[in-house]
Image (cartoon, rainbow, N blue to C red):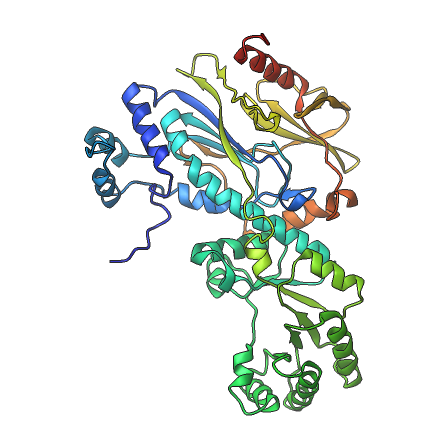
Length: 488
C-alpha cells in the first residue's frame, strides 16, 4: 500500500484544526461568518521586499479539497486521552459532505509585498475557514520564501541567467517541486528538475556530472564521448581533476564539435576559486576562438557569494544555484500567520472585529476586513495603506506605522492607487483565472525593477512605507484598550 497521499486530502492539516472544527460544530458556532487573514511580520533574509508566491498551487488544492472515505475511516480510529473515539460519527458525516463555501481574496503571485499586509483573506463559515489555515500557511509561506530568495539571487547576478539546481538538496519531493516553481517565479530562467519542467512548463537545463568524467580513462575521452552522444548540449564540467587543464581539454573537443557543425556551449566550474578560475578560463576560451562559450558556476552559491564574485571581476555568465536557494538556507521559513479578525452570526448583522493581544507589539493582530492599497506618483511607489474595506479612501489618507504611531505619512489625493487583494473564490466557486506561470515571473521581475535601489540592497535595506490607514489604527488602539480594561 502506498504511503503517498493526494494533496487534495483535507487531512493535510494540523489535528487541532479538526478538533476545533468538531467543537465549533458541537457548540453550534461553526456556521458563524468569520474573516481570517494571512500575513507575515518581517521580511525574510533581512531584506527590503518579499515576493508573493504559491497562490496558484493553493487554488489547485482547494478546487479538489475533500475528505474521502479512507480519510474519514482514519479519523474514526483516533482516540482521546480516555481511549474513546476522538471524533463523533455525526461530525465525521458532516465532513463527508465538505464543499468549499468560503470567499477567498489574495494578492496575485509575483507581487512585491511587505510586512503586515494580508496576502490572503478568507471569509466564510467559521469552522470551514478555520480548516483552511494550515494548508494556506504551508503553501504560501514556503513558495513566498523561495521566490524571494530567487529574486535576491537574480539581483546579485545583475541580469545574468540563474538556473535552479536544488532538487537533490530540497526538502523532499514536494518541497523540490514547489521550490522549482517558486524559484522560476522569483526570476530563475530554468531548473534541473525535469518533473517541474513537465508540471509547470519551466525550461530544464543540465549536461553531465563528475561521475561521467570519472567513468572514462581520461577527461578528453569523457568529453569526446559526451559530445558525440549529445552534440547540442555540451557544457563540460571541467573541475574533476585539474580545472584549467579541463578547460583545455574542453576546447579541443570544442574544435571537433565545430568541425561537425556544432558549437561548444560552455564549461561549468563547481569548485575552487571561482573568481580566479573563471577569469583564466575566459582567457583560454577567447584565445581559442570560443568567445560565446558561457562559463557556468555552481558550488553552494547564494546572493552574497555571487555579489562577492562580481566584485572580484569573475567572468561567469550563468549561475547554477541549488541548496541555498531551494531550502531558504539562511532563513528556513517565512513565518506567516493566519488570524481571526472579524465575526458575525448572520449576514444581516454588523461585524464584530476581533483582536489578539500580546506582550510583544509586533504580535498584536489588526482587526477588520482588510485590503491593501498601493499608491504611486509618476510611476514611483510612495507607500501602501492597510485599510478596512468599509472605509472610504477616495480622497487620500494618512498611514500609521503599525509599531510606531509617531511615524505617519500623508498620501496625496492625486496619487495613483491599486488595491492588491483580488477575488479568487466566491462561496467556494473559482472566479479567478490564474495567468500562466511565466506571467507571474514577469510580474515579479517588473515589480522588483520598480523598487528603489535602497529597498534592493542586501545590507540594511530601506524600509518601504506601509501603515494602517489612520481610522483603522485608531480602531485597533480602542480595541486594545478595551481588551485591557480601558488601560486600568
